[in-house]
Image 1 (cartoon, rainbow, N blue to C red):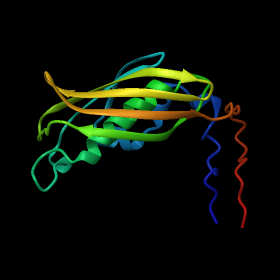
Image 2 (image 1 turned 120 degrees about the horizontal axis):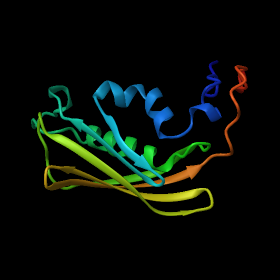
Image 3 (image 1 turned 180 degrees about the horizontal axis):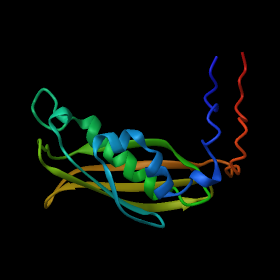
Image 4 (image 1 turned 180 degrees about the vertical axis):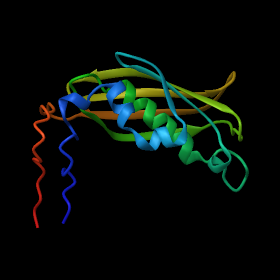
Length: 156
């Protein structure tokens, strides 16, 4: 049986913060999502809609809009030295977009108390707001220094 913690780089201090997370985010990079700006409690990402991102109505599939928002949320709530994950999220789709449209997501911290946080992400295309996303975060215990030793729990 493979452990969900079998990768020693997961949760390692060296892999924290928006730049390190983005560098390891194969899903977002494969879709063409870019990390355009970030700071404490803030991030901006963007992507241009491709043909493979269109649904049967020839508009942007909502899953891709959600993924852009979720990626931006993750970049906003992760600081160097912490590992923060989503505990939940909701999205409201307001306007459709199409192939060739540039989508820009901006995430802002609303509140952070203890290990919990709430972040709002607004996704726009040009002057139009196309979706509003609210993410809830949870910061995990402090990451470990990467010793190169697998500390996963490989129970059989």
